[in-house]
Image 1 (cartoon, each protein chain N blue to C red):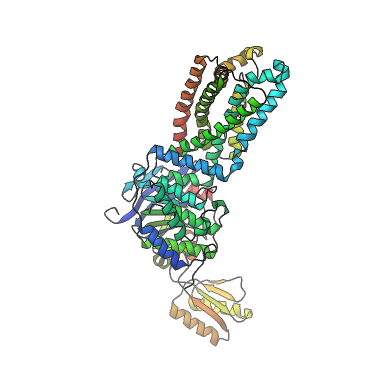
Image 2 (image 1 turned 180 degrees about the vertical axis):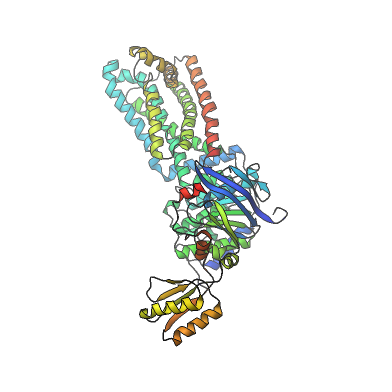
Length: 329
Length: 283
């Protein structure tokens, strides 16, 4: 497997793409080590899909450059195409054809002979648990089966780099786990995977490194642990036995922990952003001693949701139509 | 560990893993196919689509039957004394009109591929890029042939008697297929340009209706006003319909055939590169 000297499968610097007045991607830099899963995390409209489409040579960047496996995406697009695969956000197989026919079609287009193509299609359908659905039209597949046939189509010829654009959006938890398993096997066999997601736990589960992208810019990059550490220590979640004691608990905790206390919708729950574990356990003890029984409490690393909030000032989900802000940026 | 099973197979995740690893490790990447192989593969896809969605043949079967019967009996008595006399002149023209009309569906197919996302898959393959369009057009030529057979068969049933014999009819159909293939490049370009099927359909109709009806297919242009005659005279459908009549009745004027071929070259020369440009820059 050819790689750039420093072992990067994908290197992008200053990628820019405009659509009319909108800057969809506004100077994205990425460095993806070969053989790893790299997560691009961001809300809808952050520029994830546009970035992936540029890297997969489907879109020409307006500015900046990128190399995939050492090949320039603009000047050596054909060389890139022969080494990568893209599984788009929408069905990227022909829904009118059966699963078997789709895989034979792609095998033939990649240069396999007719018998090789049939064998390849059969093997892949079997490997993805779709053998029984081989003769069924893809439009009759369930959402999870469709995702799997999409993935199978992407690895007819094993790619060195696989782009997955929101591979589990809209899937039920079990189908999502199957897709995750497939991704893990692919990476174990040496493929580099770049996946976009708006699910924070997906990036947490799969990705070795994560780039958080917002308004077309990378606003943070690192391992899941590094991103969490950059926000500070984790939040304390406390549930009381008795809702009536919450005002007293809030006062005591605010005093002890020295941070703002959030009152949850649940009338017995409170959350405090960040605290030292020793201080927290002392505060819990004090609550009990003050006659405020605690039902349960947990102290954890911040979730990626909290990371996103801390980095951008807004939560990951509620933020789809802020184009004016985007243009001003 | 839980073992998620798939509803279809009952297989378990660890089994999938092993099979998947095997499927991944058994790869030697073959050389890429040449342009002809890739085009034929896409042609095969078009045939598969006809097999799975036979309803899409509705337009190439019902349109021709409807047009032939409707116009023969609607205009025959008034324009030529009797439908039987009219059809001798009309049929070669109605064949041209019918096939020209159904070329429009080429654009719809491409538009659907783009909107569904399957086009991205094809575009990300290391293949000769026009192959996807050329292959689709192969499939379309098959549909045009079917439409031609239906029109001519129906015509023969209701009294069409070509003096040019089998050879003349076959030559006329062959010329028509070449023209239809060339005309289709307009629709491939529009298929990329238009965002929705509805808008594509509307624009295609706006081009096709004047192109096919303002011609000599139905009536002799001599009674038309001068400005309209001017358009009829340069309309390639007029030349094609004249050439088609000539070939079928055995009195062909080869300059008409020549003009049709010039129009074909011009269509492909303009709309072929335009389509490929739109293909490359499609977002």
